Length: 153
Image (tube, rainbow, N blue to C red; front, side):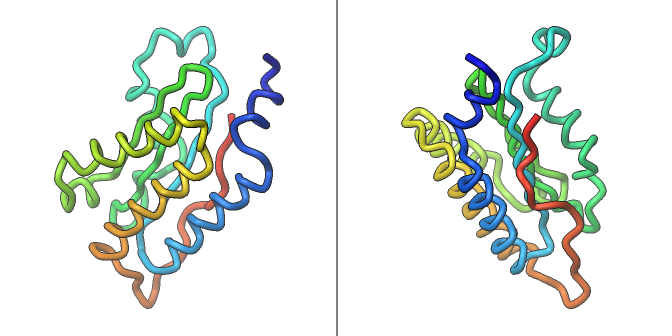
């Protein structure tokens, strides 16, 4: 299957826009930063690496670890491999129990299993948003530190 066709089957332009809008709406209420990365396929050299290592590499590449309050959260999705990884910076990790990510991952897995990619990602953003809004409310001097666009690579 051709890469362009594969992505169109997963997320349309309208759905990508909806995800970005959902991120924007959540971030209007928190100092946290949320990113969504969708990778179509791994390169030859990446295939030997663990998804968590690849996700952390992307997290640092996007400077998610450089947010003011260490409140970056990223979901890294590998389409062809049908896997994903959630990475949260230390500010968030200090505020949530480890099982929280398991619950979110289970819900996301169920959505993806039913090919509800946009709904699953938007649900993820909104669920993470609940924690971010509670623990890291918007500040008077807050600015959007990172783009809200979905990264497709």
